[in-house]
Length: 270
Image 1 (cartoon, one colour):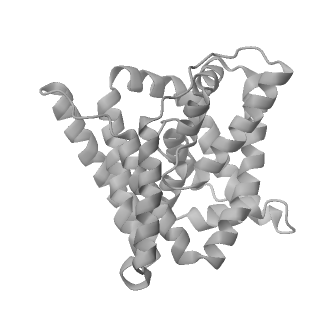
Image 2: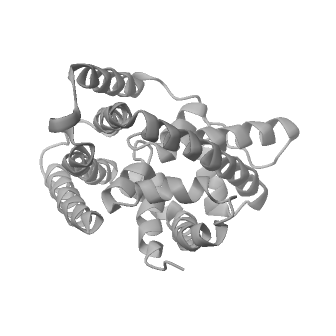
Image 3: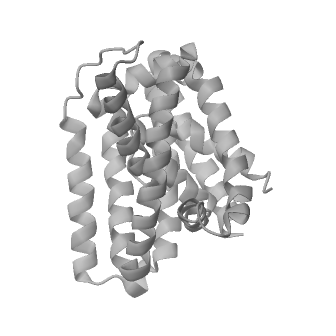
């Protein structure tokens, strides 16, 4: 078992609770993105024992964090929304040089790769202007709500694996984010179970697809990934903070995020 993945799962779990922040981005920062895709897509292969040794501690870290910190994140977003968002902005901006280096941007990118990156970044940034569906908190399952939550979890998990795309933001757009966060806070097992199954299925299917694309269209996929990361900056940008304490807290938060991203990038490279 790779128990150091507990802290990696902790960081990914925290990020997946924030609409606009991607667990895939954190995986890139930590240098485990490729390994994550390989382990998820190989979970049902003959080498499942090797992959479960990587995934189980990661899953425990993520699951425990999501359950334990859902109320904390809700509190921070409610009472310290701008500093919290600026902290994650720092993390996201800080990962761009690392991902660009991994992609060999200066060496491998051609004109059409930059155009693709710009199109993807613009498309994702434009979602910041989309009004999320009105949240109706689901507390009891019916056949209809179970199907909706299953496929919402599926869609969210596919987004989680793509750096720059937030699974939480997808849930927000679908109108089920409040339902999921409330279920986690109240430990509503039926809703957690149905959504969790959707997330698990989405992970397996999307990890295989992303691996195929990275293998056969490596530079193009990195152009997409960098575009998604850049676009996500505009999605979570909370606006210019008010002068005084909110401004100072936001500046400190984004600098802290940049510093932590730089430290984690060093860990990822090692």
